[in-house]
Image 1 (cartoon, rainbow, N blue to C red):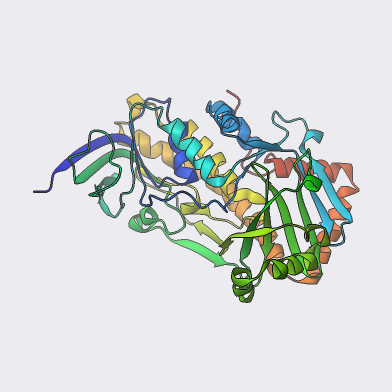
Image 2: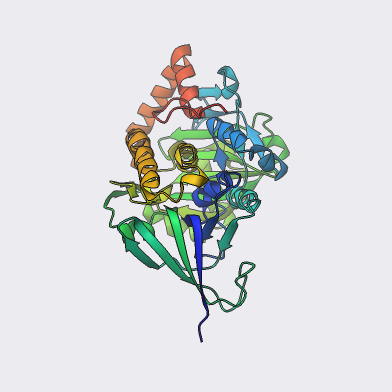
Length: 417
């Protein structure tokens, strides 16, 4: 006989990637009972984004989470340098040139960012993580999503209190779909969306830092020339990440290339990086996604489920966390969660207040993504010339730095506590 249990909660979070885990972390001191459901029992993809913007560090500080990232081994990146393939500096920026609370990025391995958020979320005595568990059986009602029934694994980790349970019927007052670009929550709610798949994927490689590589400011260093663009990005614990926009036809080369072949390919884009010993980490099939609606009744989408974007300037994870900060500020207090009308009104206020700003961010991101995607020497040359102009104009450079730090777009800055 199958043993089932009903589990009422204030908030159900579907997905335990960065967006879902960050939200669970942000809610840990709000008094909510929180259930989180994640299908995969594998670590997050370590080759994905691992740099948190200056403005996001303000948010982490407000959530009481920032110190946990330093304790986990996070490091500071103070700026970025853009060069020609021959090493001529086109644009050099340092976040210390503008008056912001945290004039640096924080960087840590992607999966460690997720793990840190998860550990903080677990400080909530009313938090339960069901993992692995498939979120497929949703019951809809006039209020939105009425319930989710999950089946727990026969073997593997099961939350305390559910050891002898096979199925759990989660009955939430508010549902957050943080389940990525292929969101089941979005599908269940019938939300439509626009999607654009870029022609050129990004190959990510890891490399060890050499003594001659030491850069005390830990700048991203990007090179651009007629043979394309390549970026050397600081990675925690003495490593580099090397990102290269490639044609789909080049995927086989990067999967099968010898060290000598990789060095030759790197040297064609930036001779300065030829000495790096690369280890293939993965490929990004790059897409942009914009969901037309985010909210239905008691349910809301966050992160890639509603606004996936090109990794140009590392916006995806950072924009998701900035949106979550707005959502958390608008959520009802615990005592109001039983009132479905209040829950719906707060979610609609979030959607109407934040989605127009995200639409503008996506447009700007698509322009930058298109420049990276083109692999056109003329486009690359035009971008290089634009960087030269910015570097020679103090006001343009200041605006560029503020934008890169996260303070220049339509999302605005976090409210000070």
